[in-house]
View 1 (cartoon, helix red, strand yellow):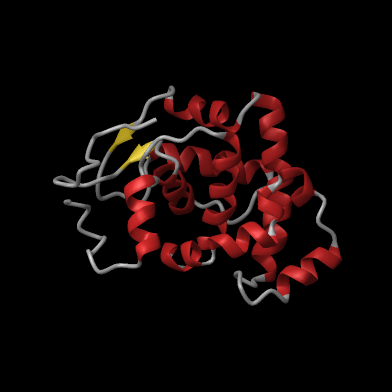
View 2 (cartoon, one colour):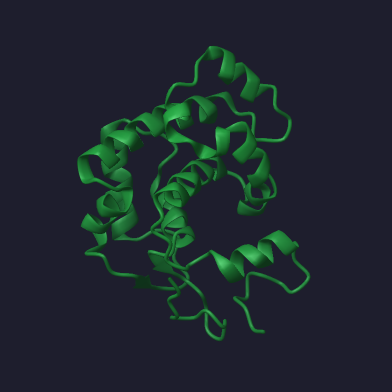
Length: 183
């Protein structure tokens, strides 16, 4: 089976599965959107493979990404996260994940779903493009999220997020997922 050039056959099985079953494939499930949002913000400055390898640990540490719980994390929980060797223990990112979650929740309240919020920037369309790390859409979303008070949401992070959830499909020719949508 042919895949994108950036994913070698001998790669981490988690990475292969992620490429084949998630990346670039539209998923507008609200819980998934939130999980990926938090994971992408932790990825800033790191490799996605690093985050992917810690994904299950993040799920456990972040109460299976239950947004209401994350929004209410206190200093005790922050210290617990900072002492968890199985996740990224960056204090700024941990604190940002809580504040960003609170703002994320406000956005969901305003737009009914986070996917609806994103669709205002994309007209509900899937974007097919290869070789970019940002575009005008990720720039606009990043700018809006920063204006709302979020951090670790630069245009590159948001572009990666849009790829992760399938709003941007960057599968390369001759990858078996090139310009293909699966719901």
